[in-house]
Image (cartoon, rainbow, N blue to C red; front, side, top):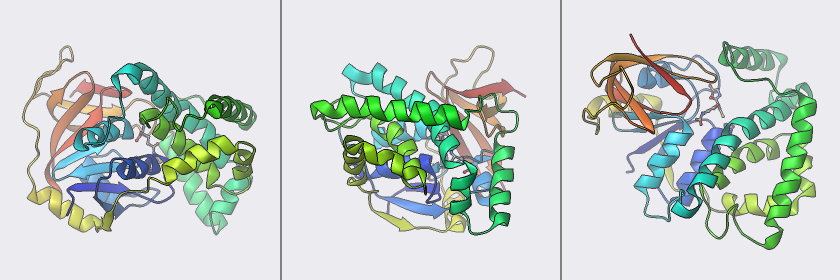
Length: 307
Ligand SMILES: N[C@@H](CCC(=O)N[C@@H](CS)C(=O)NCC(=O)O)C(=O)O
């Protein structure tokens, strides 16, 4: 059985980014279904407070944020890298833009009242979801994109991307898919799966063909796992991370720290710092049910402070 465990739910675009990557990387994994709204007691037992979706677990190591999860999957697979040296800067920049700006544009389109009402079966469900997402955005520094702005910018993006695909390239930067393809794919997947607005994509067959190339990669082979069993796996395992070093001024390995997303879903996680380098930070914490776990975060877009 594979050691990779993905905690996710079907409708999550960021989870779809990772499911598609698992297909592309030809990796086997275990699938734990989690709630789309709080409370998420089993997720929080693993992460220590981080609530966003998806989360990847390998034994007693818990990886937060798809920017970091994608890098880990790249390391674990023998497929051609998603971060080719000759395009690395461009694909990292496109990926970062798509995961933040393009995703926010898709959210503005998909969460407009007419579309959201089609997603849920009762007004109560709509209310619960909207209240949960308002809590997710509490203290967020992200600018809220209006529907009018999102509509125009989304159309511009599709038009320009379609024109770029006119030269017959199968993927965004050429013959091979890179991380940029998967980051641009998931917000478009979100729109394509939404009622009413999915028609927007029909005018761009080249973009749809490119999406279908990613859909065709599948999700890799997976088996279902319960969240209780995932917690037991964490508690029976030992983290692969040993104390490393810290590149953060005034914060050393061994210090008690608090790490939190810097954009939204700002739920802090506390523990003992075990490593902090240019791309990743990790802390160790103990939970009654998950045991001793190491929780990993990207360096970018996460705040860290000594407590
Ligand atoms: N930067 C994060 C963003 C993750 C994110 O925003 N995920 C959405 C779902 S697609 C989320 O967490 N929504 C609230 C929730 O699932 O509780 C990442 O790349 O993983």
